Image 1 (tube, rainbow, N blue to C red):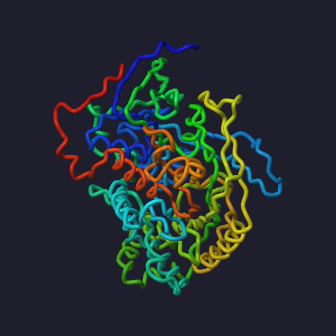
Image 2: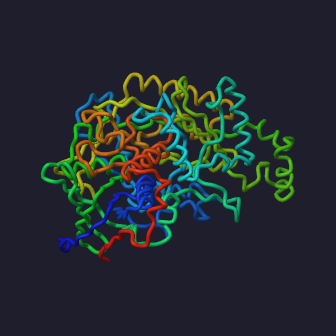
Image 3: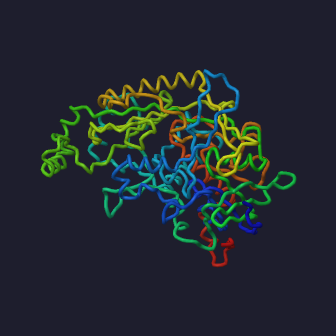
Length: 528
């Protein structure tokens, strides 16, 4: 069915993608005096745009029910790979998925926000001092805390047992609280307010305003370059709610719609630098679940930190054989990446993996998940490709993947698995049916490198300012820019990079932004 003729929209900045990174650009640029139109191909799933869906009461009480909700929002991306590779090395990435929704993956993400290790993971595209500065701002923007479950009985038991098992780890790489984007609610501390894209938007999420407009179900089909390719002249946006096409003309274009959909849009627009889609990285994950050792559980009643809570629980529920209170939060413990241990360790409860069958014979208060995330070295042959003939559900070029582990990658994963077994021994036996294994590639949803940042146009898609090489008004954001192998969760790093890029677009520091607030700021007129 043909859409209606194009309608013309003019704006200072067009942002494609409404996840945390796109929202970081939008907020920074609006606060810097720019008018911003943000579009997302997906629908709005909550009253407040981009809110984390786990803020709903029922999902905070049952992680398995939330997992079922999340799986319904994950759209498969890939087709079987057509890129030749040795069959004994090729790993299928058919689990690659995207979330088409306002807020993107932040509508259901775990919210883990560690800083990347300065030598093992972090790119050297800009100085260490800038990294520290923008990491600090990103932690504030994402509302990162390390005390979300610090008082929980199971959290302290797990942290103590692991600290005793790893006495050699130096500060700051020892066993510690997992940094999480969220905080306990003040009106009901049993609940957590998890960070979503709405948190990043801040006041921009409170309602439509003259300098910021967010449009759901608006697909950016292509960016149209000038005849010499030096800049983008306009974007072609399909409004799927009203079935019409918008011609959006902007001074600046920002694409931040994920590590696969961002290069997909560039490919569809004929912007195809040599590094596009190449140097893809993903994090191999070793996983198991354990049941807390009986001696750890037996000592709870005599531990002065927990005795009062344990007694109160036993008085209220005398038939309960588990002394941990029913409303005790799950543990969230972390062992960071270090030079001798290039893997990121999360000890907590989280969304179940697709092949994980709940064990109904064990009380969930005694079950702890161990997830060890590894890194792979960036190599140009690991890539996402796009078809010139096949189309996905949105009519965009169909992605397919080629991915394999090098010898060094494989050796690291074997060492990582052995280390996870060491941690498991300190905590308890394996939960039957959830013994140690490597999970299906891409289940971590941490694909990176596909529009990587670099210091030259031969091996990078964007420069250190996040601007596409050779296109003066096109900027990218997201995990796809990360050019290094990483094991830690990438969102904090991507938000830090976006903060720096937004500052570069404005060309001046944030502290001067307040001086530019006036009632006659440029607005956006988007046809309804």
